Length: 314
Image 1: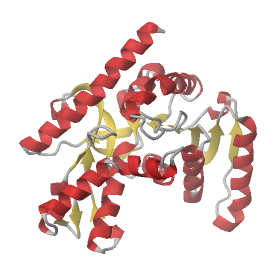
Image 2: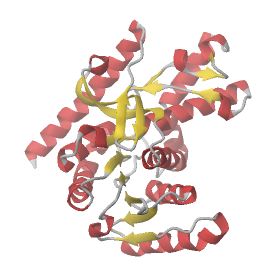
Image 3: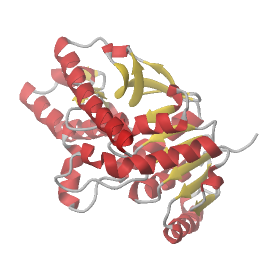
Image 4: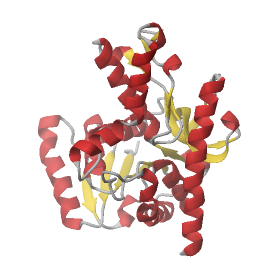
């Protein structure tokens, strides 16, 4: 049986760390593509040197040549500029749209059967770029954000309660930005909703911190953004797809009427497997939760409208 292959477009902090996390899972051969050839080759070689100590031995290549992604089962797009302090995610649109477009066009050319995982920001809008440029079926383009946002929520809950991280399961819907929609009713510790374990004010504080989790890290770094957790989230998605694990998690998916939302990438629960998004799961939301999701969707739609304006002008 032929080995699986994963290509990561962008060898910056997120892309390089995702490559490392995937290598440690020993599930695929890996290719990193970046315009900085020396850096890409150096990181690939460094990862290979670590292999005997970290117990992985699959090929890892660094290159500037998109042709080397040929035959990839999964392509992870992380390329783009990082968000700077005071910079809204939507401010990144013009800077990153062309980068993601180029990556997607080359994916369609060299890896036409791949599933694409979008990590570049503003994530939900960049999913639209990837879908349009690649021409892929909607189930084969998926955005990373929901797993990242929910794992942050999980950590904040575990920290607050002093419990094991593994005991916490969280659900966060909506766009990957300030208007994401953490769902306390569907966030549990040992199967018990956190609304039964914490005061409403505490829950509200953790929800707010989750919404601002990325900005909190940007504020500390000053000149960059988070990369360990985003990379780990991307690696989790790669594993779910390659192993056909039928993993249930929130991801940015293209909706065609689900949750009352049409023609938009937005974070919702999905089943991830060999075919990418195998199924979109519709939860029964309260009216307040529905309003939050609609507001988040409108913020993403504005970004898509800005994207359309940008492409018409270029």
